[in-house]
Amino acid sequence: MTTDATHATPQAGDAGQELVGRLRDQSIETAEISKFLDGLSHAERVAAIRALGGKDQHRLYDAADGFAEVRLTDLVAPTIGDLVEVRHHGKNSLPLFTHFEKRFSRAPGRDPASPGDLMGFNFQTMSPITGPGYYVAREDENRREVLVDYNLLPDCHPEGWPEIKRNDRGLARFVYGFMIDTLRRVSEHVTIGSASRHGKDTGNWFVLCRED
Image 1: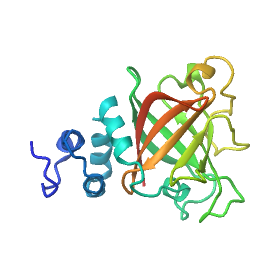
Image 2: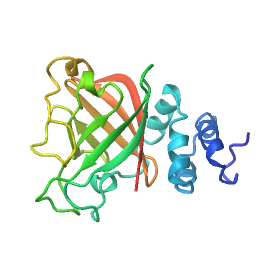
Image 3: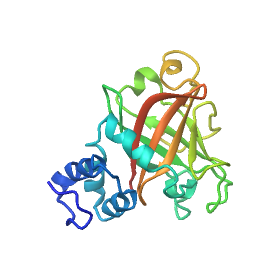
């Protein structure tokens, strides 16, 4: 397998292998990874990011540090209406139940071009047990990143979303309690995240691909 930046875009079945190879190169070229992902179809991008294990996600998170700005409008575009769901397909570094989605939406009354915050929750297999993991996403004032804050809860949600529940009670406390995720931009559709609890890194990462 070649990981040369000029290598032709692979088919869907090879996209993950290609991305893993690029991340395991001695020198990671973040701009070339971004270009590679931008050249894939949605299905290929999801296949690519879901091929990444924890070490690969860690490498990508480090490589994306300072690479490019990510804003709330990259998660929910200004052209998307209020209370419309935008799905971000994900893969985390946990040992089980690694496929999940973060679903974002913009509350009514926000400026679509500069909303200030977004609401969202986690859609995954264990949601009936752990709870939906609601959060509020906001831009980091000091860095070009987005913070996904589970300490904050939205006051509304789109029709069809689960009931809003706190993250500091029951089993949700051990999954989402006191957590803040940091999102970094990788490409137009892909972000890479790291989780922290009480301000300390948990050593867990996840990668997301926005569905247009």
